[in-house]
Image 1: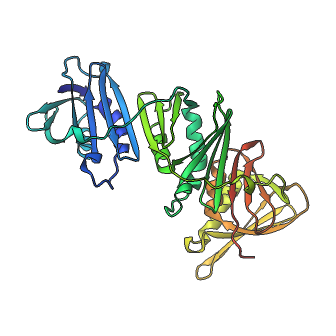
Image 2: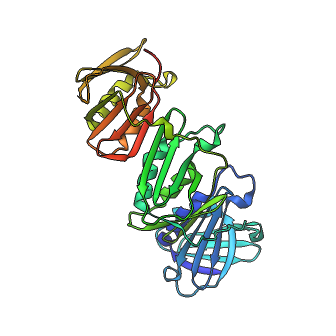
Image 3: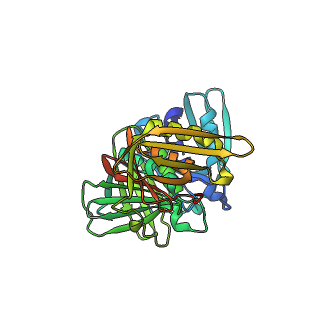
Length: 373
């Protein structure tokens, strides 16, 4: 096997498949990238058994004279070699003794190959009726939800994002038990059978990093234990998380004791300043008090100092409230709403706070208050 290719064309696709390699792998073969050069072009593949990525370089990007073949080589080393080579034509040739030879005009490297028969079968089959999404829409969904997912492996189900599809309604939910983010969108087509799966958050974040700026569609092929995403020249497999996602439908009430409307940029800046006097050890706790049409937010570190900020708001009634919460969680929640005005909805000092865009009920953020009052 031998071929020549411009560095930029090969590196673009190596940037995709390198995401399928984990530094935690004990089996050396799972640290490798598989190269498969055919008459159609070059296929690159990687897997760590939790995710698998396959991408395709069309033969039009490969110099005309090439010899087909396959090899498996260390992903880390070939990626770093190609990344650091000058931006010119790169020659890759498989030579005797299970080695490949990588060269440019002034550079040359040799890398040992691994046994290609040990590389796992990626099982990248497709369903007849995939779920179709726009990549920009999916990226927005992930930006607005993934931050709320848990990182505690003791509860695996909530370390993922819950995708529920009924008819043409897709509902994505993330929670760590202290906060929740839920996004609802309408799909272009309805599904015949309801779907309820949990996709690992880490895998979804890796997926979103591969999206280009182009306005393209992505196919979701959903199976019992995996989901396959197919878009542009890329196929990515993600294992699903076994288990039942908690029923969060009852956490978001329809009626509230008090709803206040205020400027999102002003409130975010206020929180950013007030959070200077909060600590992770104290869960970034700050206190909010709403009296009449004025919200006062306070925090303090006894040995350092304290801060007090005020902001005018609009209220839907004359109720007042005192409540405490994590400044970090509130800032995470409001910055993804993408609107000038936000609503804070309260049902008392111990009930969850609901944060939303007044003009869009399809994105809901929830944070649990901290008992201090």
